[in-house]
Every structure is written in structure tokens, then in C-alpha cells.
Image (cartoon, rainbow, N blue to C red; front, side, top):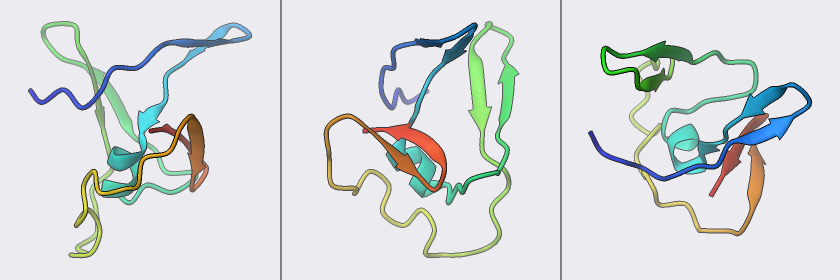
Length: 82
């Protein structure tokens, strides 16, 4: 398994939040309101899977090619952190 990044857990009221890497969000063409699947594998690891993409050769063409910025940013309504 390829490790994309490490993330910190963020506490908001009684919830725990983790941001998604902006390169992964962009690569999967995610937009506000879309759902991702969250599952546990047999080893107890959390697996986040994007919805199936419609065939679009331009989506995901530049994985990780985003210009780095500091701090969190909002990408199409999905909180993402560089």
C-alpha cells in the first residue's frame, strides 16, 4: 500500500475530523455533496474509496501536480489539506 501522507485528528464539538489530501480529492474529481465509501479492511485499517468515475480522461491526469500551499483549503466543498 502506498502511503500518501500523514494526517492529524481534529476535534470539533463531539466529532472527530480528518482532512483528505487535496491531490487525492482533485485526482478523483470530487465535488461538494459527493459521497465516498468508508470501510474497514480485515486488518482494521480504514479504507476511503471515491465513487466510480464517469469516463473522463482529463480527470486525474496530474496526480500530485498541484502547487503546494500552506494550511488547509476548501476544494469544491470538500475540506482538503496540502
